[in-house]
Image 1 (spheres, rainbow, N blue to C red):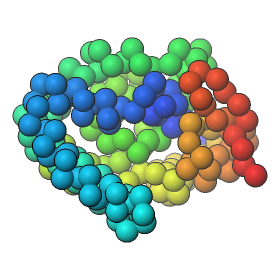
Image 2: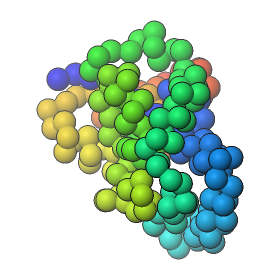
Image 3: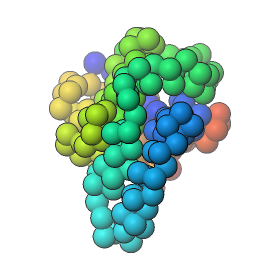
Image 4: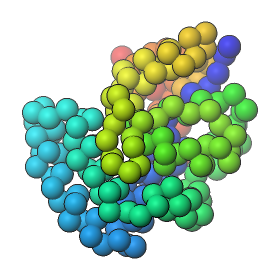
Length: 188
């Protein structure tokens, strides 16, 4: 099976959907701002290599505990934020495309279902913000893809981030996305 694989945030979605969803929730439930303030020391520790990314993100996602009916809020979010999807993607979209993202699966699931796309994402409990497994980032994306689609080969891969080099190396062709511009992914 030969498929095209795409990162989501800043690749086919203009911006970071996790941060946009946080901002969406903060407008409606301002107390979530206080919850996220507790994650700042962890973020600084992560920058210096003293904290693991999954644990830092769990600290950030604690704000979800203050959002009633997260799934309903996600549905409301996509009513306005699906406009951030980039047009270039739809000109080449295929039914067998695979989206692999570090964003939470609960956040992407309604949109991916509507677009009829397969996806892999971070497994985050929408009620608690806790992860089931690792953040779906870097080499973890490759591991998850191999686990879910062991026979798949990547024809084309698209990402905005050099952190996705492990996936780019698997592709026959890989593209770096900056805004709406595509260029060859720098593998050297």
